[in-house]
Image (cartoon, rainbow, N blue to C red; front, side, top):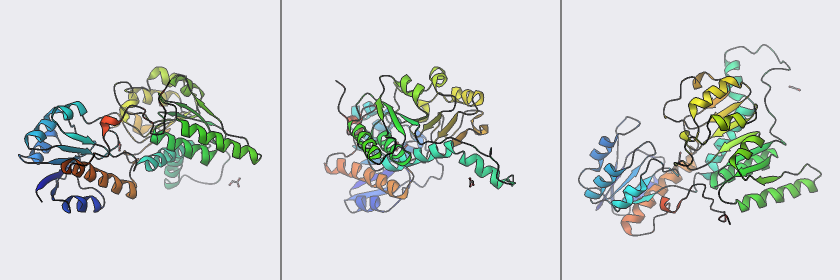
Length: 355
Ligand code: GLV
Ligand code: GLV
């Protein structure tokens, strides 16, 4: 192949590999066993000739790497993620490097994980599993692992973009929850779905579901029984959930985060979990991954999983394929598919801008 393309990690599936090698690319997949590559590790991979790189969300893609890629003759970078807070897009632009991400293919998979965390927290699945395995179950009891019923409660969604909207639909259709959401954009299709589903339920003699677009984020936090966070991480969403906002949430609320860790002040969250044993949380992401803030691992009212929201086979193979298409597209002069330059905070692909 005449184009040298580097992938900093092995990725699922083979389609992405064939796409590159069938189209004049010589692919090098890094075999370094350590999980998180440093900037120096990646500089060594780029070397003095490299046309494009497929990188990971654990890597710091800034001026140092983009200028090195430029010096190596490179023009293309793709993050294997929809989020790109690890990428300095301005630095990429300065160095003439196109940047791609992987939206779309992970929407439903990520929403399903957020739904899983919601159910696990509501019904205390992890606590109950540990109890069972510890041999503590000695018979049915009226008080054993009593949790929350979702039906008829209100689900709050902060950031009703692709993933937030998919999660909302799952919780509304699956569990007949009412919706309150906060987003800079109106989630028109989601609103229409809830209205139509509400009419369907009513026609069948059931309590209809309702929706409300909140004027402020605080309205969502105050009113919702379950709150799921789906914003983009940037300066405006860093520590979006802070002590003041935790304080206005219901004492028995469930908070779910499958977006980015720094959206929550995790130290404040640990304090809140300690002070409010009925408050439960489901977390896929953490402020200082791979670490958890002190005390979080001891909290029974927290369900924690290691950033696996997009981890279905179909989605991971799809993400890998998109990264190859992104890099190949730039090298071959096709449009870059997932271009973060077109993505905005709380972007909703089905939204209309605010008036
Ligand atoms: C994963 O966290 C992603 O942004 O795709
Ligand atoms: C519980 O197992 C019940 O039958 O109510």
